[in-house]
Image (cartoon, rainbow, N blue to C red):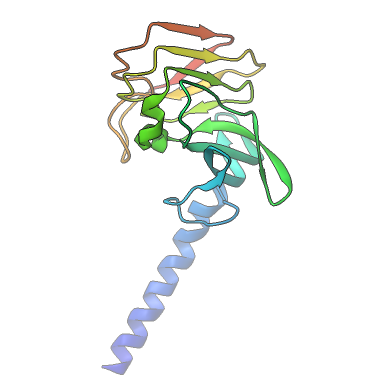
Length: 176
């Protein structure tokens, strides 16, 4: 029995050694590496990344917004967030953003010029938002609009209250 257990542990260790670096090399995080817990800075929660893949490049020392915990009707999402004394550009809106109930009190969202990725379902079914403003920026914003293991809907699906969108730059859709 002891030999079987040792063999099992060895096989498990080999499997982890093969798969772990592949996952961590693309999006290695700072702080709590559990994707379930955001790091709060003011009214917002973030994931801070050592590296973050976007189409055609890998960004370093950036963050994605996971939640809004304020109660204002107009939320201006910051273009940077500070973590361990360093300012990180906010480059993405995580798919979990829509899950926070506080977002549902917002009527207007102003998205930063540093934004380059909006994950699938990030604004899905947030009917209270009437105005979205994408600040002018040099880079296109990539919107992931197909189903995945996280959500089956696109970045902006079922935003029934949306009345106005200001788009200061190109949106690039990824249907893959």
